Amino acid sequence: MKLTKLAPFAIYAAALMPISAYADELSDERIKELVYEAILENPQIIMEAVRLLEERQQQDQAATAAAALETERDRLEQDPNAIVLANPDGDVTVVEFFDYNCPYCRRVMPQVDALVEQDPYVRLVYREWPILGEGSVFAARAALAARAQGKYEEFHVAMMEMQGRAEEASVLRIAREVGLDIDQLRRDMEAPEVDEHIQTSMELTRALGFSGTPSFVIGDALIPGFVEADVLIEQVGATREAKNQ
Image 1 (cartoon, rainbow, N blue to C red):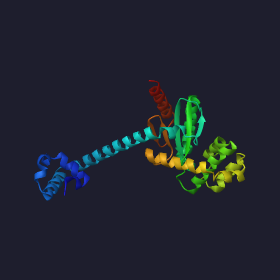
Image 2: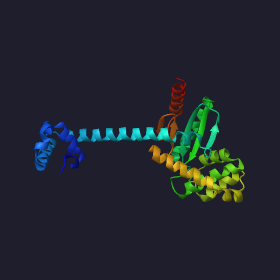
Image 3: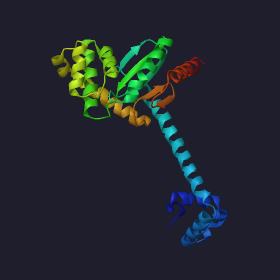
Image 4: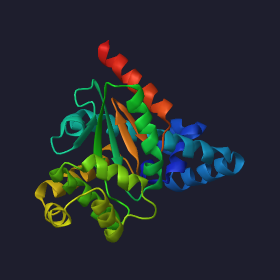
């Protein structure tokens, strides 16, 4: 048995012990005994091992996300099947992944609005990412289908401002209120571009390591969770400055 087969904390503990220089000369059993003795004498070794493991995981995740950003930049910012609002010709793109049943997504909408109001050069890309149940899926499909009737933004705002959960009945009620033809909406919900948009959102979030909504991509920054307008504004500014250097 090699040292690498020991428990992770034991590996780090052994690395911190003076026995490392001659570990190869010791039996596996003796190594385990020394590690155990070291832990009893210095319990903080375990916490240090956990910290080192967490740091390594964070570094690995950051490296994976950076590589994914490089690979997926075009799909993130230029996907012709995404929704582009605010200034389509803006110089900084903000990508938001959201779910209509996510309370934090509803809370963050005014923050995004504040960003757009303050910065007329922001290009906003919306990605429907329905992960909170069947109602979320139905709502996302309806929103994407609303594009065919030119009412995506109106429907989106109404959905984000609605009370209660997004389910089939409540989604169709909102659709009627904004003037959508329900029969056409139902047909358009089955369009291949609706499936493609949602599938792409799933692939992108998996590649980027996002685990919940809302999640933002601004330049090289990944921002998971609810965020205030000033943070968005600051990141947009930093991204613009980096692009102009």
